[in-house]
Every structure is written in structure tokens, then in C-alpha cells.
Length: 164
Image (cartoon, rainbow, N blue to C red):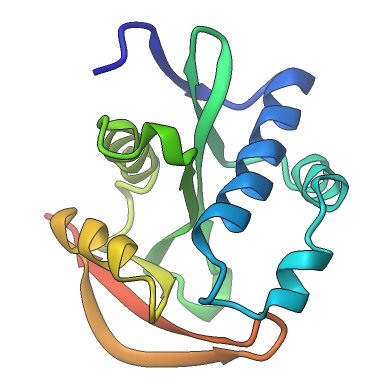
């Protein structure tokens, strides 16, 4: 358990840079062997910072003693799926696995999507740890798959039917 865990909307430059670090570090810790190594090698902290500054909205960070240790990104697909909210990203630093941070971030993200009858996400098909986590959160695989050529991996779609 983390004594000083704070879950909040991402707002400051420090939080944006912290989110970028978690994004970069999480990919490099969790995805070797799951995505093309060439893609990982090209995913620099600077690229993640650029992404974080270009997409500052709909993000909630988890902080431990002021340090960003995880984040969740959420939103919708607009006209593509107007009745479906989406969890776009959920990452936690590896040293915080199993400490309840991801569950708290997922809960915070889902609270932002309560207006949708369902919420979906995409997860790497070979990321068994993440799939088990999402299943514990109530998500089920839809059978849809997407081959992401830029990362050299297949993703599966999972969906959570929300209570009406």
C-alpha cells in the first residue's frame, strides 16, 4: 500500500513530464518481445514528452510523494463509436505493480466515462498480465483484433458493459 498516493487530473509541467517518463519507462520495461525492438529503440523519452505536451487533456496521473508513477488516458471515438467510451492508455511504473495503483487509475478513468453504456480498450494480444488485469476490472474480449504494423504487434479489443 502507498501512504501518499494522489490520483488527480494532469495539470502542471512537472506532471506532463512525469507522465512522459512513465510512458517511456513502461514501454521499455513491459514490451520487449511483445513489440518490434526497432520501434522500442526509437521510442525516446523526448518523443514521449512531445506526445505528452501534444495530448494534455483527459489524463489522470497517480503520484507518490509528488512523483508521477502512473497515468490513465480516456475519452471517446467521436462519430466512429458515439456510444462507447475508451481507455486509451493505462501505465504504472513496474516497481508499483501489485500495489493497487492501476486499479485506482482505472476507477478514476471509468468515473470520467459514466455517460457511456460501454467502455472499450485495446491491449497487446501477447500482454497476458494486462489482459488478466482488465478481466479483473470487468472487461471481456470482443474477438476483434487489429494488427499494428508500426509496433509489429496484434492488439485485441476488450469491452466493459456499464450499468445503466
